[in-house]
Length: 331
Image (cartoon, rainbow, N blue to C red; front, side, top):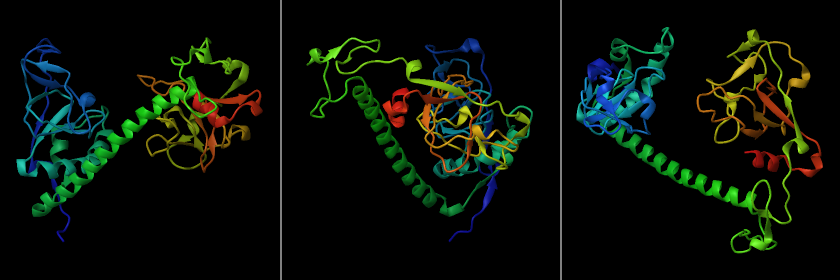
């Protein structure tokens, strides 16, 4: 077995820092090479440039690794053709025979580079930072290691493609079930084939035996508590404080080292949420508001506090509703 070793990037690759070309030379429909300023157009592994540049200043060659050197530092893609890179990127030019392994090595080590960036006033790293940071390097074993990791990545990509298709199927099925419902024979009702089974409503056509209701007539919303910000901490010194960032845009809640806050202080007992509570994001400060209105049914093994900007539904007639179905409708 080959002993694990590391090497600074500068020993294994040429580092080329990006430079922004004149804005007048860049356009969506113009001539020239593809151009990307930063990681906004990164894909799973290959970027999708939106602009072209007729007066390039820094060019990455096919096969170069494209490393984000501005927030978020450490994101990685690979150039499949010659491409112009802006100030948010650097190109790492490894020997062609080492590019496959280098992809995995840099991706594995990049979090360390991001930690370097966090220590600066402006979240970014310099050429010297990139050249100095160490990556795994195993010499003659590199191609074999890369082959194994490539196989795993290919399996992951195929699985993700299947999951994406299933999500589309689920979204369509969810719409049909909640808009049309099932007939007595558990077949999906069809408003085109059987218009006599439907009637108009504020929601559009719905089955005749259904009715639409106003949310305010069925539930009220209890707002969260304004906890003392001075007691917030990243360390588990108290209960978990629920924040909008814990709501996943794909549904449900998630808690990681980056998005979890704790409350290290006394709190009103009624602010401790219970499993089965129906919660909704009331304020979303993110640029695209992708989680505004996301609704979940709480089910966690630890204490969660009802923070401000999170609403909690209270059903006026609990016996009329299944909480899981209510949350599905809201989503």
